[in-house]
Length: 424
Image (cartoon, rainbow, N blue to C red; front, side, top):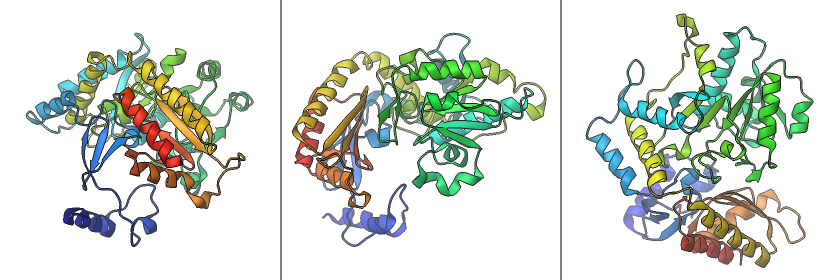
C-alpha cells in the first residue's frame, strides 16, 4: 500500500464519521476502505490506481459521468465571476434561468414557482412546511398531518424523517416529528378519512430504499385522482427518480401526473454539487403573499448557490445536446437482457426489479428463503464485485445497479460480468 493511502485511511479512521456506517467495523483493525481520488466518465479510480465502474452513480447522483467537460467548464466559468452570493434579499442570473428551465418541463400554469435548497431532505422539508403553512393561511388549520407509504424513505432531517417507513432508521425519532400515517397501497388510502391530511408523499414509480420496488402501473395516476377528490396535496419525492432515471426526465411524466409539490435534488447538478429544488403551483405560492407574517420563513445559506446553478444548467444542456433520453431505451433493454441472463445462471438471484435505468437484484437462498440479516450477504457480493471492477452498495440483500445515464453498452456488459463473477 502506498504511503499516501495509508496516511489517508489512518486520518479517516481517527477523525471521520460516515453515514449509514457501522463505525466499529469501519475503524476496526484490518479494514482498509477504498480511497477514491479520480473519476472520468462512468469510472472511478482509487489511490492505488485501480479502476471501477461507478455502479450506483456515487449514491444515485451522477448523471452524465464524472469530469464531463461541459459541466466542468460551466463551473470554472462561474468561478471566474463569483463562487457564492446570498439568495436572501438578492438574486443572480443563473438562479432565474434554472427556475425557468425547471418550470418549462411542465405545462403553463401548473408548476410555476421554484424554492431552492441544499439536498433531497431539505427539498422535502420545504414541501412539508409549505403544505402546513398553506393550510393555516387558507382557513384549514386542522389539515396538519401527512400520509406516507410503508418502507418509504424521504431523508433524514426531522420532518422528512417523520415520513420514513423504515423502522431501523426512523423509529427512535417517530414521536417528535409531523403526525404521519403510513399505508401500503391505494386500497388502504381509500379507507382513510382525509379531513386532517395536508398532503400525501410518495416516491413515484419506484421506492428506492425499499430494495428498489416498483409501484403497480397506473397507481400514481390513481393517487392524483384521490388527492384531487379529497382536497389533499400530492408531494412527489423525485430525488432519486428525477433527471432521466426512469426513462422520462421526471417519473411523474410517465403517467401524465403533475403534483402540487415536486422535490428534486441528487441529479439536479449532474451529481456535481449540492443543490435541491421544490417546485409548486401558483395557487400555493399566492397564499404566502400579503402581510409579513404570511411569508415563508425558511432557507439555507447556500440556497441557489451560483456554482450549483451553473452545474445544473450545464447538465440540462447536456441532456439536449447528447440526446440522453433518446439513447436510453437501448441501454435499458441491454441492462434488462443482462440481468435476465444473470438470474438464469444463478439460483441465488431471487428477483430482478427494474424501472428504466434503475435496477435491484434481490438475493435469497435457492429455496427462496431470505438470508439471515447477520450474514450481510449482499455486502459480501458487493465486495466480491469490487475485485472485478464494479462499485455498488446493497440495500439489505438487494444489489443496486444504477450507473450514470452516459454508461455505454459495453460498460453495462462489464457491470453484469462483474456481478456474474462475484456471484460465482
